[in-house]
Amino acid sequence: MPGKLRTESAFDNPDDVYDALINAHRDLTDEQSAMLNAKLILILANHIGDLEVIEEALAVAREGV
Amino acid sequence: MSSYVYPHYEYRRCADHGLSPPNRHQVVIVGGGMVGLTAALDLAQRGVPVVLIDDDDTVSVGSRSICQAKRSLEIWDRLGCAEAMMARGVTWQVGRVFFRNREIFNFDLLPEGGQRFPAFINLQQYYVEQFLVERLQETRGVELRWKNKLAGLMPCDGGMRLTVETPDGPYDMEADWVIAADGARSTARRLLGLDFKGRVFEDRFLIADVKMKQPPFGRTGPTERLFWFEPPFHKGDSALMHRQADDVYRIDFQLGWQADPELERQPERVTPRLKAMLGDDAAFDFEWVSVYTFQCRRLEKFRHGRVIFAGDAAHQVSPFGARGGNSGVQDVDNLCWKLALVLGGQAPEKLLDSYDAERGHAADDNIRITTRSTDFMTPRTAMSRRFRDAVLKLAETHGFARRLVNSGRLSTATFLKNSPLSTPDEPGFTSTTAPGAAALDAPVQIGNRKAWLLETLRGGFHGLYFGNGALPHEQAAALRELRAGPVPVHTLGIANPAGATLADIPTVIDAEGLAAKRYDGKPGTFYLLRPDQHVAARWRRFDAALVKSALDRATART
Image (cartoon, rainbow over all chains, first blue to last red; front, side, top):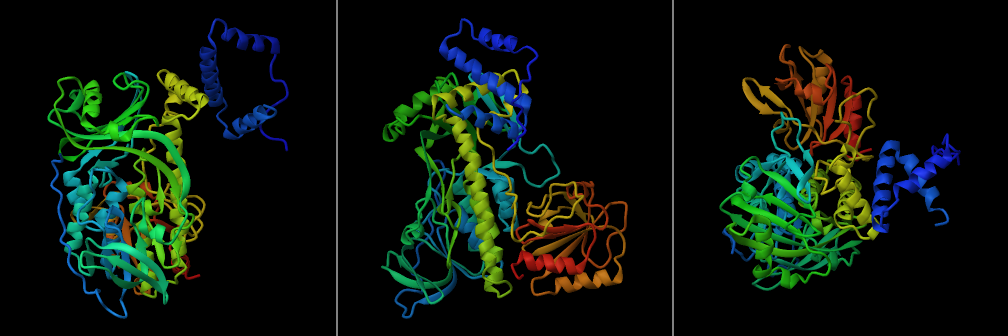
């Protein structure tokens, strides 16, 4: 079922994005990293704003966990 | 330890002792708490004789449900006892939320004025019950039976047979209908063997009601609800402070599941917690101390044949949100007019199934909303704690996160979504007063007297007709016919100050234009309101046939 969530690549430069994510966690303890991730998820979820998109993303993220 | 003097209501031997066959009553209400007392008053004022039994002989012990919402006050005003409550209670509408030392969020529950009642008053439950009893004592057709304890409940002959224990021994009576408003540990529920399913929250909270000579934190301004996540004076957990009548302050401390309830309620344990919060030199006297846990649960059905459950007997929620007592009051506001119509032969019994549908939906709403608040305040996993803390941190600097902060979403009038009694809305209305919504108040003028729209809507079905000038002859006749029908509809004209009043029907002047604004009341607009002041239907023009069919629907006669 095609949903609203975009899953084809959206990045101009995927490696830069991945690198930015990894770099953001540099020198952090696991606890601090987990807090950063939680804040990041909230910030991005608000940016998306659309509950349907967020729910689809959560379903995809839960697959195979 | 309390500064409140508890009234004691005298036990009297009732006339039902030793009768065979037992005496039969139309309605017996089990439970003299705020919900049962409100029901008794509502039914009696509709001319339905009521017997109310209560196993005690006084009001609520402890302040318990303290936040009385605007909708409850509107209901109690219809029943004639809101003024006493307003005079005694503490008005408030702003809540502030702190994370550690800093305020991160505040909310105003009544940003728009021009309504008779405030968003909330804080008034101890014992006062609410006292004022209800005082009103009942001057009401005809009510018999309050104190020290009468329900001991048996069996179906009989189209009604219920109740066995009641008293200081004079037991007696039996019968009732066409029983309203079970006997609280969270309902005896009626147990006697019928009904399941009460839901979630237990594994946390304990301390309530300390203290009387203070000086306002805490030097706060002499308007009363506000104060809530702290991780306050410096109570490490790691949350705290809440609320002012009540008589300079009594409700202070809640989250204690955690491991806390020992017996130990934690001892003054030598509570005093240091309060001093840490209020300062070493703060002077206070204890009024009431309690340690509680809570559950979110409901009966699957609120109507079981001739027994109808209301308030905590039917559903329980977490206390953060003031949705316990206030939803119970809305339950019986929803129930009593229906029961009166059924008893009067003006509506079929199936009208009562709409009580289950409408208030069941409200209970689901309240459970969902308070469960979310509780999950925020009492995170159950390391991950939910992390998200909660992330929200609190972001809230210091980012507006979007402030709206995620949840210290309780406070009770408002329930919107009766998908109600079987509502007529589908017409397109094009821009106001929130759609079918299912509670009517909104507005300042009006009756002749030269300043009044409120809601005070003109007492007890029955009402029409609201927005417009000016004389009505066409056939409309005036149709409105007269509606007023004289088996279920009368009393129509009120709402005229703008510039125009002439509507001839032929009682008319109020929409002095500040707020009624027209709140109801999107362009000239010609007609609303049909139920006896509980919820909107049943609305149209852009009056059509008697449509009003009659909406009235049939709202009384389950179709």
